[in-house]
Amino acid sequence: AQSVAQPEDQVNVAEGNPLTVKCTYSVSGNPYLFWYVQYPNRGLQFLLKYITGDNLVKGSYGFEAEFNKSQTSFHLKKPSALVSDSALYFCAVRDISNFGNEKLTFGTGTRLTIIP
Amino acid sequence: DAGVIQSPRHEVTEMGQEVTLRCKPISGHDYLFWYRQTMMRGLELLIYFNNNVPIDDSGMPEDRFSAKMPNASFSTLKIQPSEPRDSAVYFCASSLTGQVMAQHFGDGTRLSIL
Image (cartoon, rainbow over all chains, first blue to last red; front, side, top):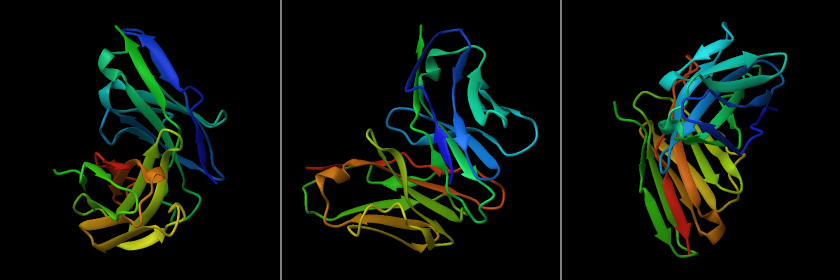
């Protein structure tokens, strides 16, 4: 089984400050991990992914995420928040130990609000 | 490049009517996914296809829901008969196997059943 937890429904950050959106996962084997962003009335847009290798992954719009196997976490970060970063963020996991499994399991989402 | 295209963008219909949602995946992608998003349940995977063949439909809520993929460039999700609790945003996504490609989402169909 594969699952994802996003413990915060809402995160508020002042513009220019660093931001973190938290995600923890559970899989039987090894994970592929993803972050997506959703703007109002739009579909989810891919931000970044962790497959293997360097634990720090860089993605679109200046976002990065750090894979921590011991803590089973994949937190999304950005050094300096912009008002335009305000959106709904989803973490997703896929258990690659399950051969042929293409299913992504999404978290419940975190609404990020950047305060001017 | 054109992304995943869904139609209609909005659908309002009365309870008991048949509803058909349509999706055109990105050309060349061999996986297609149907999701439903609600405030209460979040984002749920309904069914997914590989090379036009349904692989996992365990998320389809009940027999009122059916999905088809007659060819590589078209899929439908049908609800018959529709009920108010089916009101949600339905997303289609596609991906390409073998390269751990991310799923690419359409902009969804907002369905309201009165």
